[in-house]
Length: 214
Image 1 (spheres, helix red, strand yellow):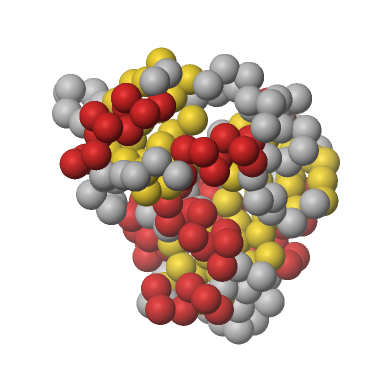
Image 2: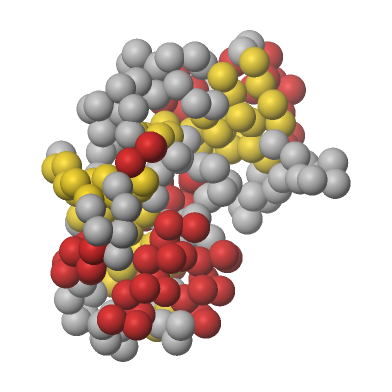
């Protein structure tokens, strides 16, 4: 895939690279591991899913204590608006993903073309301390779904929290909404990413892509 080839050009020997979660990042890792020498690059995954993929590919996984030294992050997105605000967290790793993105010197988003929209409007994942569940639900007072597994058990994040998927309709001011939700006691993180990445790859197909810069 040409978008993956182009995005990989930013990798340099000695880098510490943060890895987001989801199928796009898993596919990106598998693709570039066959194309370039990853032996001199250390990675920090944000989910067990990607950690297992990195282990399978023989990548050097480094300790979380090196998060402040991350050079570059690769991640995906569930939705991206015209101002490059994002909704993320479909896989439930939004808290760690936001930590590594904020810590990194640079960040790159890889997303299919249909993820790019004029305004954010899909349900927003919110990671919540289980103890505060009812208080947070009452405080938000919207159409809220507690994320569940197929067999009816609540989805529990790797941090031991639950996910609320909340319908806010068309989001006109992502920055303001992100901060309003974060101000509610018991909310650990919200899946609105108003702090943009540096580079966005809009993947059209295996041969075509567009790049947008912050």
